[in-house]
Length: 422
Image (cartoon, rainbow, N blue to C red; front, side, top):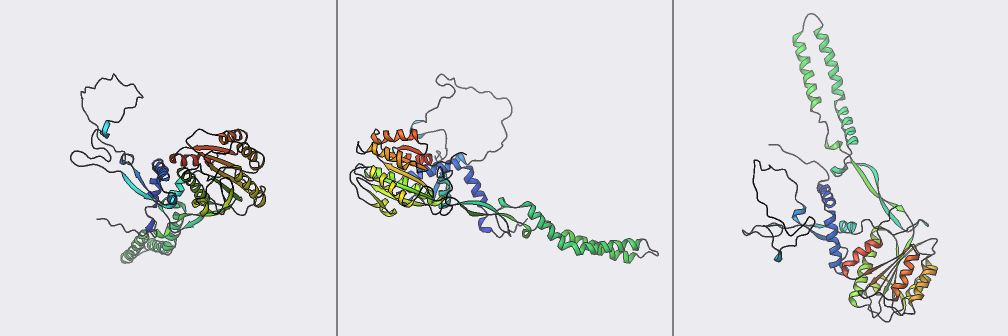
């Protein structure tokens, strides 16, 4: 029986490569599960890990099997109801043919779906994959730092996928040369001595036998040196280095007026929590300014923004004026990338909506890199939406989306902050 001894120093991470390969292979199902998890979780539990369920049919491996040989006769039923491309409805009551995935057969046997857990980091990486702040430009290379993976030489520990074959073979050659150089020199000397003994008279068979045995012993020692050893292995090393980028500030403007019921406010908060996690996960030291408004606007901290119960009427322009004042006082546009995300149910004083469009058109949009407006409502759009539609046609850095239910939050978020194609 053969015995394998694992001498790798990174024993705790042996399954890392297999896990990464599995995540890549089933990325579509995992992303769908993550999108569902965002909708089902509580507001305070958006950033933890997640249990993913994958149907067992999706993880089955293809196999080769022996085909049925010989001649066979079969009678197929006629078809007078369907044409190619028709979709057949599922049988009523969830029935089907046989014991499929997750169903029990008459004898009590069945097959469960495959369930596994991803970590918090894996969850957030998949959640914000292929997203970025649009139109980000370099100006003052101070605050905002993005991280990028770079090659950083070689390391003695790593996962098999990162093994450096050439460097490992070089180490193997150097080790074998160092360990056998003296023996090879002795071997050459003994071979020369043996050749000399064979060409001298009289013959000396005992001496020849002794030299031959020493030659064979040296050859055995040289051949016993392993071609490669675990000490020879080298792995490509990677490290995340901060990349100087640009200063950026994100303004979060949320309507907390009386027309925003609790369900609508919860959807707005879910959107802003996703935005906040995205900014803190992807960028370093990005500043976030929180503004709540009803008839009056107020700059608040993170806790008050998400948990305050204050409410009132609706004057959207109050938040826009406050944002404009803060930008001109603290965030000059020649030094900062300015972003904004506004959430509202669209309810506003009719004579205030044209003023909002004018404020954005003349003072805010010329200074911002990107402005996103999210209207959370199932009703018909009102004057604010119509005024903003005119802005969307005029400005490329203005985007607007409608959220009707919790299921729309994550798709809308990805649409607003998807990575731009160069």
